[in-house]
Image 1 (cartoon, rainbow, N blue to C red):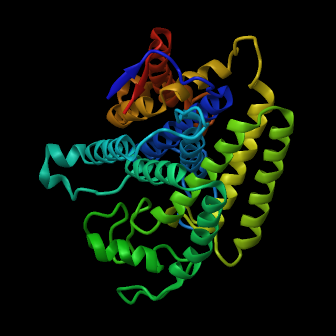
Image 2 (cartoon, rainbow, N blue to C red):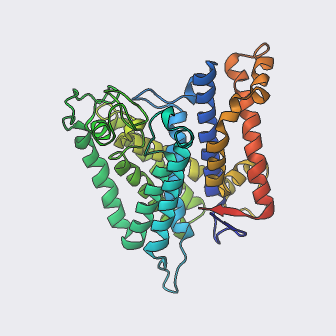
Image 3 (cartoon, helix red, strand yellow):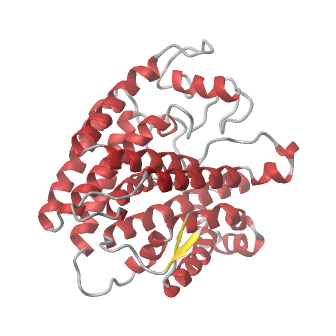
Length: 374
């Protein structure tokens, strides 16, 4: 882990803001789930993931962050006099490996402390980010835009029949039933139904599992295509075109969803299109609103931008400290406010205090001019 004292030249404020909003969303969603399942406190339903098919606000934040990983790749590449990227595969593979290993360590902190506490887990959020970053960055170096679009289309189309193949363990195939897909059965076959998957049991699987990494790479590649477009064209015309592209992706994904449902846990192709479309619309709107301005960004953008500039650092700190939301120090505020507002609103108070603590950390990094890179 290293630090940099300067941002990358040509950095888009809209990218940092949206990346910040998405990592804040990921922390909010994880914290809400921790309070809901750990303390049996009611929370707003949209802050909890869909059990299988369907889409809530919670289901959109990690996909948005993953797409931002792709958008950032063309922006961050150093270029030669001919305008072509000059990066090599070695640093990309090394960074992807660091992200995967760090994710594995953070996913298994309790297991490392007590081997009898349960089974270790191979996959996770940072692991997926590492794999998607590595694949997308390498493809950006070695393929052109048309080839990348072809890869996206091929993966999204072929992933549909892949889900429908007979399950390896004979479980009846039903896209609308949790875990009843070929992709889920591969997770069970690789790591054991009762063992190392996030969802255990005979219908178990891992939401960041083996084969579902393929459409997540396509997800990142959509971000790469958009980032490459914004690298070359900016302004109102570019923002307007991106709004149309985003709306088209949402429309196609929704039209596909009656046959291939929106399933975050399997990263279905319709889910990719709808969430990429929503993220593209948000990025285009932010691009039109804040990019190219000469005046410094004001509140509330400044809250999000410090999270966006050190998104991985903020998420890693959250992974280490997430249990703090349940501490009496924070949770006492729920008991105090639940008597005057609804329990779901009161549950947001300790979460907001916890997120303010994380903000203080990333704001301190911003004041120092430090960008933590893994």
